[in-house]
Length: 411
Ligand code: PLP
Image (cartoon, rainbow, N blue to C red; front, top):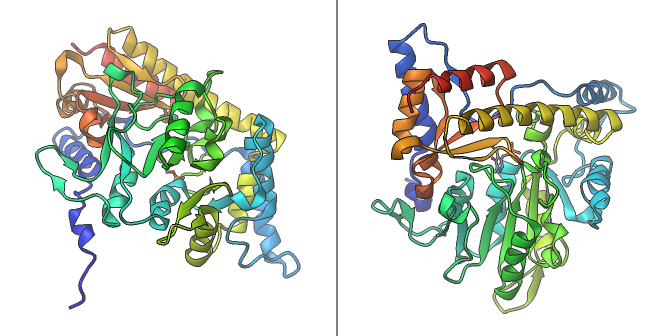
C-alpha cells in the first residue's frame, strides 16, 4: 500500500467544533422545545449588499453571450478588482502597493493555510495562543510542528505567544529564534487589537531577526478606533518583512461566495540553500499560478462592487449592524460584572468565565441554563482556558435575547 504523509497523524482531532455540536445535539434531544441561540461559530447572517448582488447579476448576464463571455481569467485576479483594492484599501491610506503584489483568492483560510509551503520545512513558527487553528494545523501537515505533547497540549517545535488578560492580550516577543510569526489583528478569538506603536515593535523585531510576519487582517473592516492600524504596511519597514491577508468574508457577507486577497511586497526576500536571495513574491506567484485557477468572474465583479459609492455605504451599515450587536453583548455582560474584552474593533467578545469556571463548564452552563451556544476559549489554545468567545454575527433580535437570558443567570 502507498505510504501516507506521516505528519497528518500528528494532527489532533478538530475537537472544538465537533464537541460543541455533540453537546448541542444531546441537549436538543433531551430538550426538544428549547429555543437555542447560537453565538458560536463565526459565520455571518445578513444577506449580501445590494451593490454586490447587482454586479453579480450583470456579470452572470455577460457570461451568457459569446462576445462578453469569460473563461479562465488571470490567476492573480482581474485588474478591475486589483486596482479597486489598491486604490481603496491602500492608496487611500497613503500606502503604495503595486498590481503584481496583490493575489486574489477564494479565501483567507486557503491563503493563510497555503502560504507556509513556500518556506523551508525547518522554519520555526510562532503563533499567538489562543489562535485561529488553521495556522497551527497547516504547519503540522507540513512537518514543522514536532510532536504533540499530551501533557502541555502543545506541539514541541511551535513557539506559542501567550495572550491573556495579564498582558492585555498583547503577546511578548518570542523567547527563542523563530522564522515565521503569525499575527492576527483584529484578533480572532480575543477581538483585541494592537496600536501602531505596538505593531511597530513586531516589524522592528522581524527586521532585526530575519523573520517574516504573516499578518492576518480578515477583520480589518470592523476597526472603529483611530489609533488602530488597518494594514501592517502603515508601519515603516513592513514591506520588507510582512505578508498581509484580507478577506471579503466578514466585510461583505462573502463567507459562502468566497473571495479574499493576499499582498506580497516585492521587497520581501528569503534565502535559497546556497544563501542567495529569492523574492517571496515570485515564489507565491509561482505557487498561486500552478495550483490555483482564479476566482470566478462573477465573484470578482461582486467583490469590486464593494468599492463603489453604494457598496461602501452598504458595507458600512453591515459592519455597523454587527458592531452594534457587539456593543450590546459587551455592555450587557459588563453590566453584570463580567470581565469582557474585544468587541470594540472586532465582532468577537472574549470574556473571562465567572468564578474561575473552566471554559467547558461555562459552555455547559450557558447551554443548559440559557440555551445559548458559544465557543469555549480553551478550544483555541491553552491560554484560552477560563475564557469564552461570543460572536456579534447573529441577528439583533437573538443578540438582545441572548443578553437578557444571561442577565437572568446566577453567575
Ligand atoms: N482568518 C481568520 C482569523 C478567520 O477568523 C477566518 C474565518 O473565520 C479566516 C481567516 C477565513 O476567512 P475566509 O472566509 O476568507 O477563508
